[in-house]
Length: 439
Ligand code: SAH
Ligand code: SF4
Ligand code: F3S
Figure 1 (cartoon, helix red, strand yellow):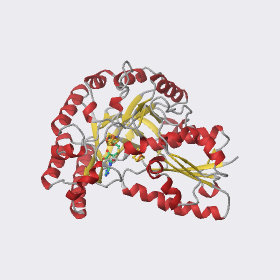
Figure 2 (cartoon, rainbow, N blue to C red):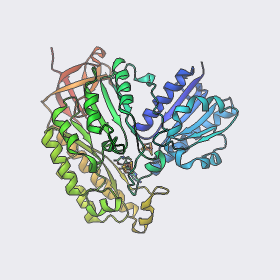
Figure 3 (spheres, rainbow, N blue to C red):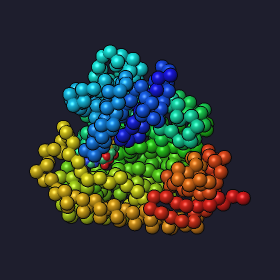
Figure 4 (tube, rainbow, N blue to C red):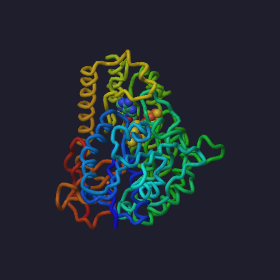
């Protein structure tokens, strides 16, 4: 059997696409391997959101391409960097066989079959009517408790820092029937938790008159037997309507955790980012969500040092952190991206040292808040869905609460897939330690 090795960088969209490629190649007789030295086909699914993830491609290919001198191996670059860099990647890496963007994932089989005789470049975007959401289920999803399901691809927003609209194209909503078919197929394989994926899930279906909305989609997924937890990412703060807020009051399977990227706490910076909400509107959405679901835990994304950000602007980000008390955040220094509108603002670039100092200040306070919230949970009983054995400790299993807290506790692997009551005995910055409360 030919073997395929897939390396995935970037976000959940890429993880999901890699799973689809594994499934599609599996149908063509390929076996997935974790061993690079064993692979006949090596695919790397890339990310361009910041400069750092881009560099990962270069070091990965540094390991892979020399293998071509010893034996025949097809090497393909997929994902967001492939989409924006296209032909330039062939110039830089002449030994690469395939360069293809996210919209070519469904054609992976043909491309791999043709590649040994012919180089292939496919970075075209397929529009609203032409985009096929692959329906094959990732073979790795069988036996897992949690799985991703794409409900939308691309993005119609143009946040000035962001390259994603250029890498993934315009927003296309996946038909509700297809989403439900995939959720049911996963539930049949034992999956209990689904995370619905899109760049801006709240605008699901809005472009097409009469199309189901995101709130309607949530209600439909809620009906699927076997699915016990529903998460989604990413949500744009501007677009959370009253119908979605109401879901938090009415749908018990909807998780008590929401990732709601704010990017900055300063209205001036938010305007320059073209996020189309103010700090006050963000806080208002949070208040309405918490009124509907009092124990809702929030996490966010922050960009430090966006061009023109002053000390006062950054203080606004710090005070927003205090006001919301996010339990976690992904925070990064601003990274200029090719072709993005913010490049025009670079005359106001924040010096690297200042940017880094702000980032560290934010991260250190974020860690304290996370720690405080975890220590406050010590002694409490938590309802935990057991996901699998702990990666580090033997005899320990790991699970999650509805609020997305990772809890490690001594237990047998038989517990995987079950809900258990766990008493929290210690809190750390990112995880909790507990013990089974049941006899
Ligand atoms: N669609 C999502 C975000 C996708 S990109 C949303 O709108 O929230 C994921 C995160 O990467 C963003 O939330 C942002 O915080 C970060 N990011 C994007 N472009 C960046 C850049 N040029 N520099 C630094 N961080 C960036
Ligand atoms: Fe990028 Fe903004 Fe679209 Fe998110 S909403 S993917 S940050 S353009
Ligand atoms: Fe990266 Fe593309 Fe995701 S740029 S963050 S892999 S959408």
